[in-house]
Image: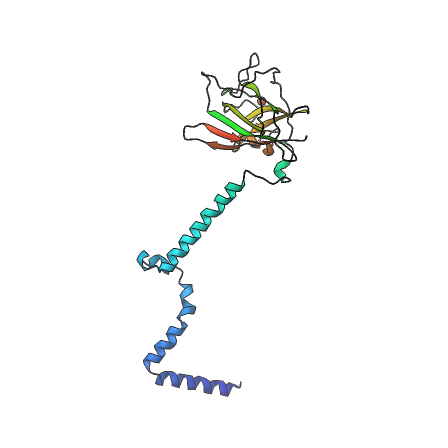
Length: 242
Ligand SMILES: [Fe+2]
C-alpha cells in the first residue's frame, strides 16, 4: 500500500469517527473491553464477596475438594507398598558400639516407673526383600537413658522381643538422650529365624546432630509423630536379606 493510499484511509476513518453517532462509538469501545479486562489484576480484591458469581464459588469448592481428596487416597494406599520399591532395600548394618550386653530380658516395654524422659512407642514390621513378613524374628533393643547414660551393669533400657505372625513388633521405651560424639539413636539387633543377625541403629528425624554424626544414616530414620501429651510415636520397617 502506497503512502498516499494510507493517508486517504486514515482521513476516511477520522471522518467516519466524527460523523458516527455517539451510541455506535460506545458500542465499538465495549467490544474491545474483553482484551483490556484481564490486565486489571487488582480488581477482584475490590469486589464484595456477594458480587462473586455462583459459578466462581462452586469452582473454588471443587478445587478444595480435589485438594483434600488426593492426599486421602495417597494415605490409604501407603500401607501396601509395591514390592521392588527402593523401600525394599535391605536395612543397612551399623556398628554395634561398645555398650551391647548379651542376654537381655524378653520384654516389649522397657519402661520403668521412675524413668525420666518422653515416652516413645516404636512400631513396624520385619520383612524380607521379597516383601514377605517374617514371623518370630528377634529384635533386641538397647539405648541410653534420658541423660545419655547406658546401664552397663544391668538391663535398664534393654530388652528383646519377637515379631508376631504378621511380622509386626511394638517397642515401648523413652526417647533416648544424647552423649558426646553421637546423635540421638537406638541400637537394635534383628534376626530372622535361622538367619544371620543384622546389627543396626535407628535415628530420629530433625536432630541437629544428624548433620555431624559420622555414623548416622538417613536410611535408618524413623518417621516420628508427637502426641498432645508430649509422648512420641516412631515407625520403622526392617528389611532382611533372607
Ligand atoms: Fe549408642
